[in-house]
Amino acid sequence: MNSIYWMIFMGLLLNIPSLAPVLFLRKTQNNLKVSISVRLFLLNAFLVLSLVTVSQNITQNYGLFPIWLVWGAIALYMVTLVSTVKFVRKDLTVGKSRAVILSSFLIVYATRFHAVFSDMYGSGYTLNRYNAAWTFFFLFACLLAYLGCAGSKTYSGYSASSSASQPEYFKPTKGYETQSQIDYDIAERGGVFYPILI
Image 1 (cartoon, rainbow, N blue to C red):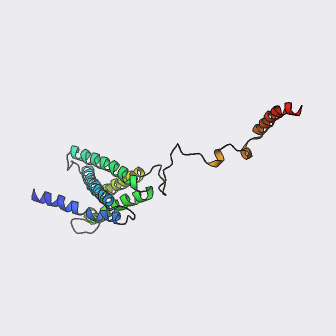
Image 2: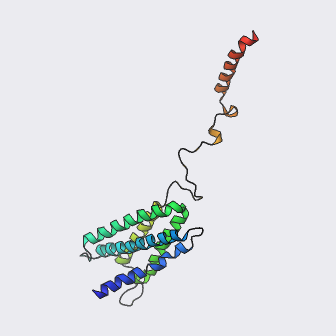
Image 3: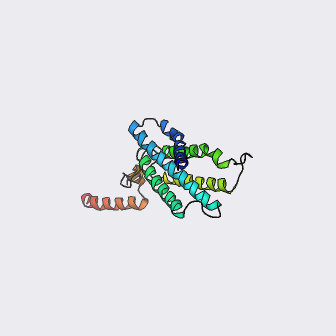
């Protein structure tokens, strides 16, 4: 049991470098950076847990992990992803949100590349079903994060609302009226001024 706890502890320590993108956020308060770092750490932990359980159960004839653990890891990852994206999008633009989350994911993948692709028999890096499944579901997780960061907020940080005032070219002005409206105005004005002319 001690070896299992040690593996879990080392696996969590490997997620620390994935928090580096938060350090590059400028004009951001320190408490906000700490909150984003904690959420990213949990998100990466559940991401690795889901990748390991799903990849092992797909590539093994008999699942190495119980099915409830696989579904539980995926559910925890999805819940953490949604909450993290919502939290990050409150204070960051679309571009910064995607850059922080996706670069954090890439660091997680890079730190585990040797363990995922290296052959235990010392024959170098090999491509097998396990690391192929790992890579496929990692890219799928990145796609979910990319789509989750999309929204109505633009890169400039302006959120367009439906109740916003219409642009000037939507306002009816005399210069942009149609010919029928101009004819109608002339007819109305002629009716108004006709008694005066008489």
